[in-house]
Image 1 (cartoon, rainbow, N blue to C red):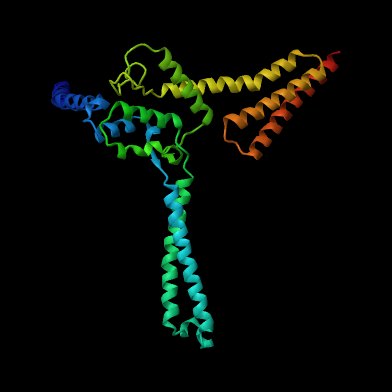
Image 2: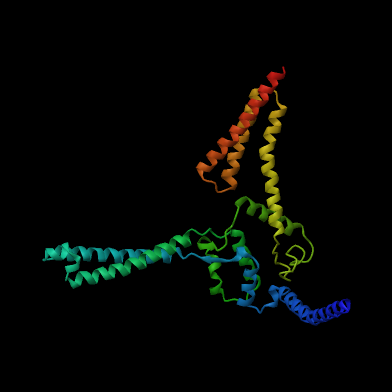
Amino acid sequence: MQSKIITAYAKSALASLRSLLPKFTKSRGTLDEEQAMQIEDYRPGYPRFSALIAAQDSFHLCRRFPNLRARLLLLKQDRLSVLEKELDRIDLEETSVLFLQNSRRDLNAERKSVLIEIDAALMDYDALVERNHRILTYEPANPRDVLSLQNWVKGNPYLARDETAYLAHCKELLSVVDPGDGIVGRLEAWIEDKLIQFYKGPRGVAVCSSRGISRDSHVYIFGSWVMRAARTLVAVFIIALLVAPVAICNSLDSVNARLAVIIMSTILMIATLSGLTKARTIEMLVAGATYATVLTVFVSGTISDGKAQS
């Protein structure tokens, strides 16, 4: 009896699952349909241009407007200077010393009005300074990304020229996203250039991410595997930079030759940090000193071992 009840419960559970399967399959089909939408599926104009920018994070570029920011900052600063002089004049012309010594009993309406204006002007001034600081600290746009957007706009003339003219202000453009590690970004660009140079297959599918972003034969948007390949090359380079001097010193018997290897390796390390990263001077000094110290200790240890064996 109990087994029959369990069997009946199992059948009812399977029936419930089967009733849910069509809905699940339909929702999956809708999701795949949305994911398969490519850039060219959007209408020409801003919809298609926005789809292109959304397909690549590094394409999120905009102008800083440094000239306008400087103009506004100067005007607000001058307004505060004028108000400051006005307050100084009122204080000098004040006939009642009590008003200057006790703010609670100050009945000078003109001074109170100027102070209110100063407070409002300072709030406006400080807000602009903070906004400028935030905007001006963004990383500049990568010239490679700017050129890519310029080329796409030229090949797809669906937007008004005046509304894409911002791409011509290369020195003012900033990147909304963090560019990340400089050396990895350069290697990514190098790998992409080589793939574009030698790849002869269909564009927008095999060399791009798996879902196919574009059908345009001139559009190349690579997947995250390019970044992984670049990081792998960086890791190999770092390992070689750290391990090669140790192996070379271990194969040399001359102390002078080992010291020469240490010096050259340290110079190469500092040059690598200076040219390929954004390390500060103190960081490069600490890294170089640590690297040279480790190599020196290794050489001293191998020399002591050699003397002990002899």
